Image (cartoon, rainbow, N blue to C red; front, side, top):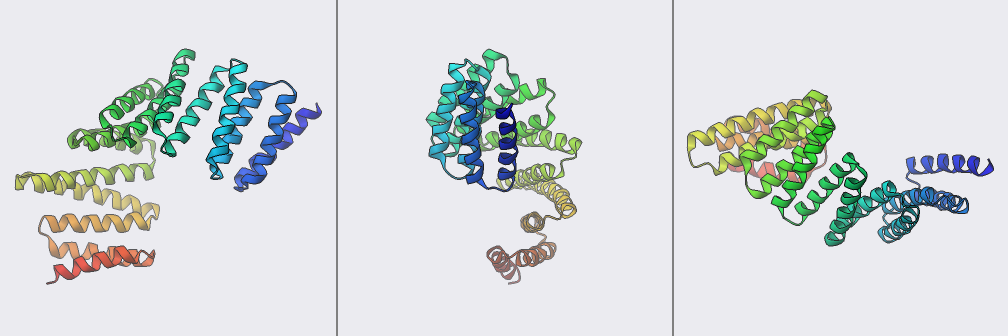
Amino acid sequence: MQDLQEQVRLLREIRLALQENDFARAIDHLERIVEIAKERGDLSAAARHLGNLALTYYRAGQPDPALANFEAALVCAREENDRLTENGLLGNMGNILRELGRYDEAMRYLNEALLIAQEVGDKRGRGIWLTNLGLVHDDLQQPALAFDMHQQSADIARQLFDQPNVALRLGHMGNSKVAIGQFSEALQYFSEAAEIYEQLGRDQDLALRLGIIGNLHAHIGRQETDPKAAREYFREALNYYERTLSLARDMGDPVSEAELLRSIGHVLIEVGYHKEAVGFLENAVQIFNQIGDKQKANQIRSLLSRLSQ
């Protein structure tokens, strides 16, 4: 009973410490709760707490003790044959190793996690590890392999009726298609993602995807050799930028607003509407100055100077 009360107290203290980003205090309490779990012979609990200790070390910017505690957690989970906990630990280790740029190790741990998730019937876990494997392949500039992983993970999210993750993974698929150079297919995936985010009422995510769609239309327009087709792509880019600009203003996001004003100005220049471009670019300069981004403000001033010549 006393141990249980102590655990409840420690868990409360850990939660408060993490909310305050007081990692040293959280680590002290986590180490104590690991000791209690081991004294009771509850290795599954020890594994979970060691995993949380590892994540806390990583949040504190200490990857080496983070990985060491993950390894210790794996030992406990395997002794108890706790496959679900082992699965989560392997996946988290893979994610951290990816962030550290240790890609071969990251793939090894993520593939192990994927096998266990399949073995225990953890469909949600399979989707997560497939996504993270896809991101490793993205980092390694292997977009075709990445796309395959992201497509599998998106299919799993659909099976689970998990619309936020369907949208997220469609975006990853779009990024992979951009890296391959298949821009029309990328547009399709980003458009599907944007439609889902609009249905979910997630304006920030919607704005990000609409902005990407605008950028893709502008990029395709610049590559297009047929002037009529190019102008159509630029027109579509402007439509998406204007929708995104409206969302950015509604959300009170001056950084995105300034970037979009600049993008609209650039596209208007592309289609020959220099006078109209000036108004958007001047507004962008004003906002960049207000948020303290003098470098971008000066870059646009240089462009405005060239336009006036």
